[in-house]
Amino acid sequence: MQLLLLFIGILTLGMFYLNVFFLGVQDNDTLTTANFFIQITYMLLIVFAVSLLVSSLNKMQTIRQKEVTQQQFFEYMQVLEQVNTDMQKFRHDYINILMSLQNYIEDEDVQGLKKYFYSHIMQVEQQTLFQSKMIGTLENLQIVELKGLLSSKLLLANRLQQRVTIEIPHTISSVNMSLIDLTRVLGILIDNALEASVAKADSVVHIAILSSNDHVVIVIDNPLQDATFNISTIFDYQSSSKGEDRGIGLANVKGILQTYPNVTLNTRIEKQRFIQELQIF
Image 1 (cartoon, rainbow, N blue to C red):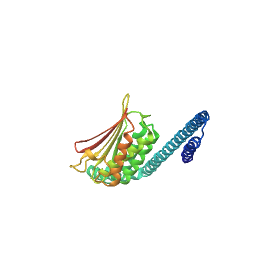
Image 2 (tube, rainbow, N blue to C red):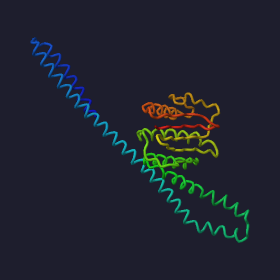
Image 3 (cartoon, rainbow, N blue to C red):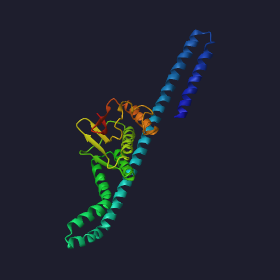
Image 4 (tube, one colour):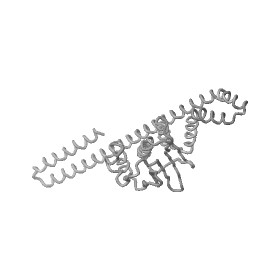
């Protein structure tokens, strides 16, 4: 692409010098004919160069899309591998878990059994079961890029010990938006939701991807950390109280969505929860 831009620059400069050179020609017919052929040649070369430039940009976009797809698929497979490992461990310990309940059952100690079950077994294994359930909710999402993104965010939430629920009640196979831009937008919104929620005990981030006849709605909501939070300026650069990166991230979201007249983002606060609702028509 840089070579094409250099070629266009040299061609334009050459055109300028040719025009200056022919200004010294006294024969008007010769000057007119020469200028005509120069202009035609210049236009054809410019059209050819621009065509190559557009083709190069399209190829770069395709390559970038494939890279994003591969990365998201890799992250999705990582999550599946982790969940599978955890489930195998759970099955391996299954007999030992049952044996640990034997004495409580034989002694008919219901209260002791209940206490042991919730304080030991559920506390240890609930994260594995929760992850397995969350991965199962992604079955209706048939877009690899989004499935990989959500999987990677589940891994991040697990590392942060942050609860996330995902709801995808219907099959979703396409969206009317560039998947690169969509994953960028959702990545920023989900990261912000996790960051805002991790400091609050027992907080839950909810993510829902819903579809209707003509559009897809993606909703991300998290508990509001600051009661005086002002949503009117959050999409301005450096406006966030959570640090520079977050402020820039939301400003980038605004910039990306401005290029999509078919996409709207509704930001609101309801019942002390911060809600981002992305509608793609």
